[in-house]
Length: 91
Image (cartoon, rainbow, N blue to C red):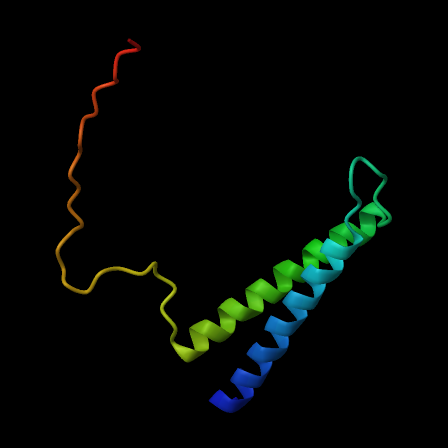
């Protein structure tokens, strides 16, 4: 599978995830109303999201994407400066 095919599959998965999320948002009832979806349907939607996520991770691994969190390249850890505030009196 070449990178163009992977890219197309990634686009398809991304669009499927967005569309499925939109369907869930549109079908979610407001203000304590009963959910129009059956419990089995809700579980199937969750399973679809899980499958999409797993496949996206597989594709990212094939392309060599780093799944680590972003970091600063300068190598120096972020320093913090703690400032103490005095609570003003209620006079």
